[in-house]
Image 1: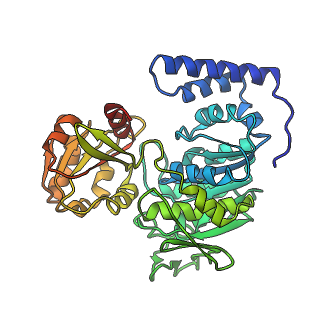
Image 2: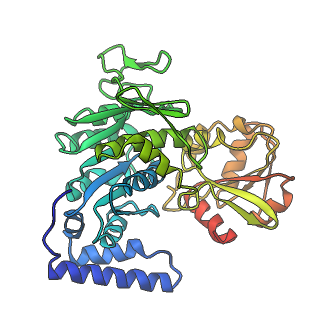
Length: 412
């Protein structure tokens, strides 16, 4: 354990109480969970509150462009085998939301925290984590966050010499470069389906060579490290070469990769792979993602895809044609207001699917689908789109705020 902390100072206790009160008021007013506004108020009253709340916990931080919410949930389930866990399970992953989550963990032993890529270094400095899981880096919200190489450099500089065990994806060159400044790294062969942000060497700018699953820079010698954990089909291979079966209720290869990284993290805390993977089976959905809901007499599966890498993974797990698909894209503050990323998504993968398009930026998406030579209909809202969809379970793919809009509409 991280060791028993001193009791919270009077100022910290006041900050926690005020934050919880504001969060409760926000929920009562129907303004969401209140975790962010509650955390902001608490941090205003005690700027060191995040550090104080984390002192008694063995903390794991999880950061990535895609998969961090799901991986956080899988790790939290695995570590419950060893003791009580507090986690920001709903995905509020900036300091205010993290502070709110930890304020509810006074009796917990472990903290499993999802962290926005931009805030990872600062949260690591505040929480003194025992483990940091780095899954992937790809383009996302370029109007808000830095481009991927700059984010990787921020991680590399900020995590240099960290005492934490870093569990990192050996198949993502940007993650490898970022993690390589850390003295204690466990490499996981988790795969990388989206490669378009890692064709140039992050170390020297040279062209990356990618023979098979390997990668290396022919100019400076930067190359894929040898992993000690690996995803192999439906199994996780541990450092001893033992193969442990993955049984998940969550769909797709990406979630098996998340499970492999989660098993490696759990092992850092002494939870064996068999126990960790068995516990992960309990996870059916993550903050509404992958849920199948009934709406207007139809089955809708809700899928979140926020950026080109996420859309590519999502296309790989939807039902085959002629399953109907509804696509929804917004461009609000939480999404990033720049929709140019739509042109990096290979929408020809939807050929054969009947497609309906909704959302604030449905016309942007319609232009992109037209260029991709897809057959689609532009609809006013979810109700109209469902009415126009032919029979079969409907795959509904949406980016962040569009996904939240859909969850509210279907009562999820």
